[in-house]
Length: 225
Length: 350
Image (cartoon, rainbow over all chains, first blue to last red):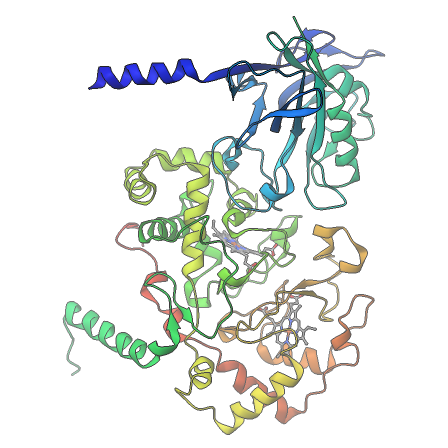
């Protein structure tokens, strides 16, 4: 009996196609290393990252602008402190042809308004605001000598689902080689667009949060390495 | 010398008298043993489909509500601020102390009939009862913990392995299950058995004074404190004026719209006798002060409710009658309901 069910299980596994998408963060074209590594910025400034995570949701694969696969229950928390979390397994049918991937950076309004969820959406993942309802879509924390506060800290908690500060952003990327591609987030591009000496603390839904989320959405790219 | 009843007999007698009350009233009460309400009430807004009520989940939630394990130093439970004997509000405390953001500058509201509420907190910052508990658990001046730490602590306790298994067929505590169980318990806290309710269902009669108070209430107060829940769920500036030290912007903090400045949720008036002090910052100690406010203390401001712009004149006699009516909203059975009480059988301390 146990042998039989093991056999069935492995059969099932072979039939289900898992498209593994790796999501990487890079800084100056090098893979991001959190916590210890100090990265140089211009004019003798430096930056260090302590926490970096975001939600990728509503993943859709398209072929020539037509959706060919819409992932069910599509919520992925990508946490660069948890290496397992940046390998997304998207179950797709055999022989699916696609040349673009679309996703939302953040959590849609309906999900935000409908209470507690489990899995990647469990509030114990640290991506839910507590004093006001709603998910944090994108969280980046660290230190830089550009930040003019006692501990030189920056904290970007970007989120919000009530208009006009609806924070979730759509990201569309074309995929030239669907058999071999990775999604990268160019963290240096995001950091260079910041004004850390003036704005280093965004903790609630507002226009700053929306502007920074838009900027983050522009930092995704596809690589075929 | 009074004869002492043996414990078992005493509890039977209490059960008997409770069921006698229930019997008298039962034609108008609907629901199962977990969630009673009056048949004439509107439909609750809580989504029972997403979080179906069960006895085991409610019990888990009740134990969590009374267990200080939810706070960082294991000293404070939900019931520290929401005591059942004060209709689940804070005994005699206007504000929690010494911090700068919202919850610490506010008075703990009653927890009554939450299944009918669409948003929570004085400014409606919380959009769903299932996520409500995150706020006190994480607040530095309240429980000062966070949900991942709470889940870790729960998973180290035998008691909770059993309770979580009974509730969710999974002995491992998760954030989702912890929060949902507390919400389930909160949902069951319903007050429907006041003298007012009995009068409405021809089970009792108002005194002439209460009757006159009811008339005044319908004319002057019911537009906001709407029957039968005694709130219309709106956010309103009722003219108490800003405490300049706290400068609490109310609803505007959530919507960021100027026109929402100093608006707060219209609170229910059920069990108002027990939930002093009053208003979002607990500025009035006595109900009499509240009535004086409405009759001659309304402060004009840009966002003051139109209904209060020209004040609500109340003569001294009218105030006395109105007060008599407000006291008919007290529900003693609710205050001492064993289903909401400290779960001795699970939590041994005190």
